Image 1 (cartoon, rainbow, N blue to C red):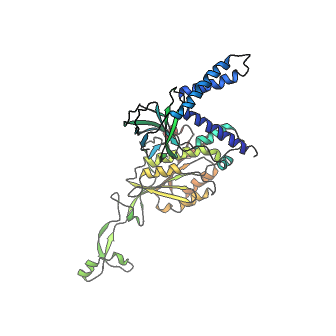
Image 2: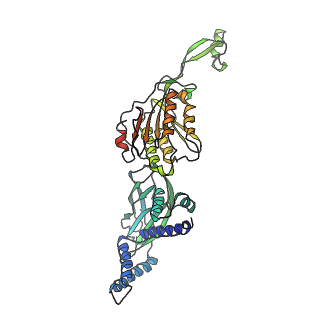
Image 3: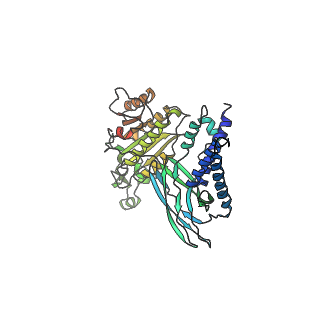
Length: 431
């Protein structure tokens, strides 16, 4: 579309100017700037209005503030430790240490986290936007904002003094928030504008998916034999542990011969082990969401994160399964990954739009022999998903399914729970 290129440049310029003004002007300066624009528009005709006089006064104040910035220094030493993880929708705090290494006292200081520019690239803009409107542009910008931190005022610092400042922030959505460092501001003598200095302290913040409270869960299925599971077992359940010795039988592996006993008894003896049985559940996430169903997909990820966080993996294995560029399986419990690791994986999962939905069914069916049961979290409900679950049922796999859907499901089967976006917590209470 011919309008996309110029609209992208205009939208990017407007957003950049807005961010620049919010960083450069204080609250009082923003008020003066607004008055400058209004009086400038009203006072164009000097014969009909005296607003031009107010315009002249405000312009003089703004000009004086801008000129004084050349003589205002905001150079201080700053150290801060950004948290490694946060949870979407939840506030968090962290501390920064600000030190005045100069020989003069400093006041009017402020501190702001410099998160990466959320404006999309031109290619991303072309791919995501239809008819270009500023409202759609703002949605794209918001989709790239993972965290936001408030500007924090810093107390006056004497020469050589240091102070610890607590910064309040909020995690907006799951993903990885990149920070370029901090921006230190110092107000001019009039308190209208700020001199800015960047402190490069690059760091990443992983924002975990939002989680819901789940009722007490009774997972489907029963314990199954896990061939080769000795490397997965720890101290829970019936691990494949040494039971005793018995006479060698043809076909026994040579690595199980107990050579010391063989030497003493003058006949081959082999070590006998008890087979390992334990529960192994699959947490299946449906990543096949259309662009218009992005909200359904985000709710599905949050529900999957709630299950991963709630299920006690000390007593079982939990396989997180989804389709991305390939079929992925991550296992938690019994000496494997921790539940927190699964949440970090879910923080980065993206919709799959280049593979058929059947890839998910094939991945699960290939592992069904070792699975105790499945929890399927679906980003929508249609005949293709219903057929997939019926196929699981025909294979004898015990499962429960949670589908995020905007329209109610008529006569749902007993193994399906349909929840609406925006009412997920109420829906999960019926689980």
